[in-house]
Image (cartoon, rainbow, N blue to C red):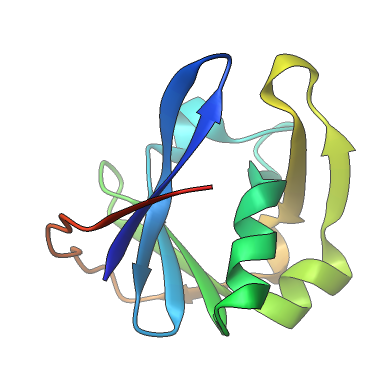
Length: 116
């Protein structure tokens, strides 16, 4: 298990947790949802890391609404689109409507870190 970070504008930014063959992102969808609530996004470096580390799924958890969405890495790559997001750099945008809703769960604390 690893916590994944990147450096954006000279600031260490948390991207998610690598647990087993999944990357799990926990955040309030309300604050991060794009384009009228239809997409979720993540840094392009996370996609590269996922491919290099044989990740099979991305899981997005909203701990406030207790909502959990899952998508396979191939589906995320094939159905998402990569766009430059100003000072945040390149981001993958994935439509929420193609993600599978799964049961809510909490992730364990992770102390080991990797910075992309």
